[in-house]
Length: 127
Length: 222
Figure 1 (cartoon, one colour):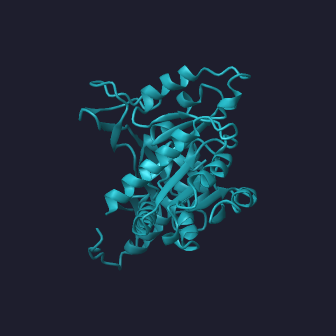
Figure 2 (cartoon, helix red, strand yellow):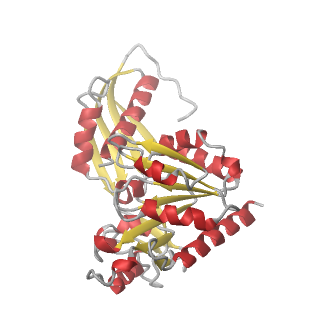
């Protein structure tokens, strides 16, 4: 049940962004979840709805997209997409020694929010 | 409503903390090992037998993660040069931030090895890099020979897999070849050692692996 920890990381990121953009309310949040992270979407949604209470993200909806795992074999260099619930075997050499190249991250994508119209956004050097 | 496009890793804070831990550990020149397994598979007993066997030339520190109690730290305290108990409360895994706090309580330059005994859990600890150098995954005979296939991500991430409590092989139905077969699909990189902390089986191979990895590490950092 590491979903609670991940939900609070998402909320921390949201509050940081909301502060930067002077957002008064957050509507929808798109998050990509790599399958290597072993996240149960329903559990994350439930944890998220608890973690946003009392913040500008309260009531926000979470849109989750799961990202499949891609790998490169450390032994023969072949690129492949393992079915990680069953096997990490390289289809070309048969070894299970992958370097994961996608599907191992949790990324915040698009956010909709109400912003203060008086506020003119200036590019943040971090963006 | 305004739409904001961002590409921001939610795990950035955790990854930064893990990276900082790794930098401190590298600087101190010690080898940090994250032990992961189900509760009761023998992590603490393994350490109770490993630390004295490594000898006085290889002083060890231990960070122990548990939801509650200081029992593991009490067991390891007399053996390790220093032990720090981290209580995670309701947390099902150690976080890099908790490890960072533990590291602050240790004089890292004094140690050859740091063992991080994670919370007993076969799912969540696998998802969090703590800044360790190597990951050890334990599976004990009483847990059953089907567990490697049931927890593929944990076993995939292992740098070594230890089959523990092999002294129980005579009395429990456990097919070691099934474990080897499952590992061949998930992880052909990690060596696989059958050990019994209690009876001593396989401890020489495990200790030799630890010493090899430590030597490889100090060569690399020179």
